[in-house]
Length: 205
Length: 205
Image (tube, rainbow over all chains, first blue to last red; front, side):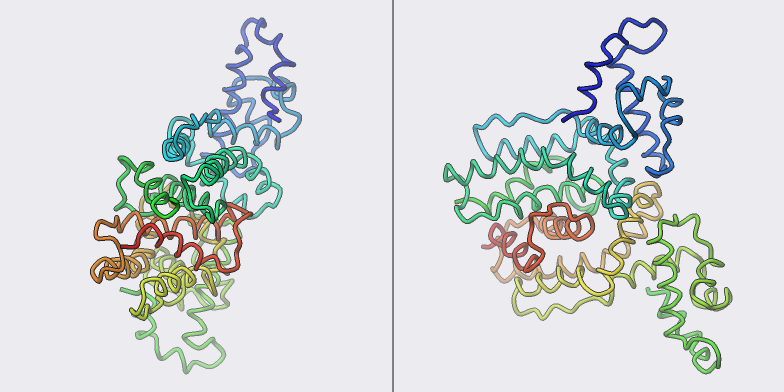
């Protein structure tokens, strides 16, 4: 269900066009352009395909060959911000949760954390954009859900664990801290481990 | 340290001026006007004292008699959004925490939750506004800190509890859920109790 991947297959021939960015580079330049415009405070409504094309150094047609419309482009831009889905090893609930928390706080996710904050008012104002946001985060939330369910099933976690609330108890503090630096007195060093260990102390069987 | 209270004392004579809102009503109309402008998506930079005065139905001079500048007005508007500081009873850590979580999710706090989200990008962009936000939330954070420290001191909570992380573990999920509805699968009914009980399960002595 990734518009970028689908479109990249269709436009594979772009790779051989001289004087224009190769396909993967163009994709990245286009997604970066969207994120930079959002990060600079432009609203979703104010961002045009023209502006994205100009910033990315590609033609409008290049964007339309890859994405059918602005919304599809935006979904991929926000998803790219998060980086590829991490892969839990399945050995320990604790290690898998630490891996998932760290994946949301490093690399592109960190670089574009500001973009997420800039989009929040839009998510609150616009039901469609909120659904889009939910579609982007659901695969990651579900990855963590599977880890917790595995822990309940194998007896590592309490049988009566409220899995959905526990997801929020891991993601909420992590987001409020990385996006808004909500409590300046909380140590950044070792944060993922400390958070997961605290949550698991109450969630353990 | 509340600019509104100080200014209200100075302008007590306003109460007797016919044809203009009484002092307390004017204060509320002015603060509401600021919050409505913010909630409608106007940036802090774009909001003028003129616009606030027009929306509140008062003269600019009325605003300047109460607040020395826009920043002071903004601090009071955001603080008013939160409502008066709740008063923990000091009988049970659990009941006090539930009270504090609920206080951030009801009344004005709920009505203007959207405003907080709209301000988030500003907090990230502007160091001064972020400090202002911290100044507004610190008294509430400290109230919760005192409840946790009391619990550690009287043996209800673990002696080695990370109090600052625990504050984030209570506020983070509550905010992400009330502001962004982060996990639609989490029940709104009984949320404060469920969250506090889950956190305390790991924090208990």
